[in-house]
Length: 417
Figure 1 (tube, one colour):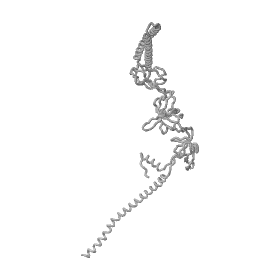
Figure 2: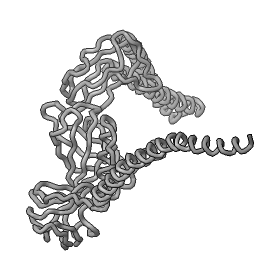
Figure 3: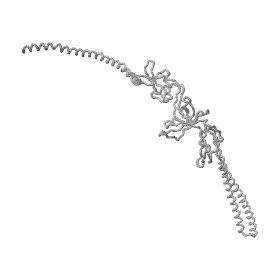
Figure 4: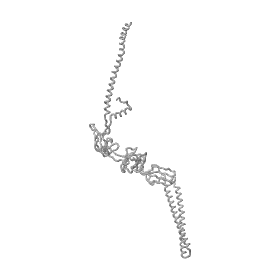
């Protein structure tokens, strides 16, 4: 039985081998097929990466050049400031006497002539004061007649007493009394004369005050403000209340605020002009008249006022208009200019260097002479012509591409490489 068992076992093992091999073989074939599928994809990725590196890597190392042709035009070097418009001359017309404003004969915007009646204050109280002063003066004048008569009488009595004393018909004491009486009478007359003069001055002042109840324009101009209304009571005992303000709008003054860093660049007599917000293309020229020595300080910024005048015959310029002011230090017309960023070194009236791109596409350095310069452009007086391509900036292509991709990403998907 044992031998039979040993003979049967090998037979069973030999029969089982083909079944095991048949299970393992398909698994090996599946793994082999997967390797062949991964290999082409890997090669494709390597090729795409090499293409992206070769294309965009070269572009990232390339440098872009921005050029600009010189152009002819006007250029100026100026100090800029902001300012306000005001009349070249204005005056506050007030009341010199107290009383009720009886009538106001003008309104804002009215044109007035010098000497024109513009307002009237109730004069009843002052007229009463005049009557009282006139009556008091008449009383003093009547007293003067009496005092003068007493002087005449005292003088006659003195003459008589002297005659009597000379003839020994009167005592010396009588003569002394006559002398004293005459002196007293004359002193009374002098005192009364002083009272008369005082009363005459009082009457004169009352009549002047009566004249102040009618208010006349002190200058020719335009009513720019009214500070009182008809029926309003004005008290002139402490300060003169303003009734109207008259301004001469035929010429306007620009009050420009200049920083302390720029005020040293200004000179009296230099050309200036300004533009308005509503008329940006129109220039109003003038000449710097004054730089006020006393500055104003706003938020720790020191500002000086520079003034210049401009005619205003049509009345288009109005008070408190905002002006953009330009004080011209130097200027030129129809000259060759390039961006100031293109010039290396060099200042106004000095030499400098620029880079130009020649016809072959190569860059070369060119020496130039510069003229007037401002914050944007610079005048070229020598070394360039209108056909020279001047380099105004350089940069890497990858920066430009990065900027372009950044802008495109807002509405487009990112590139693959």
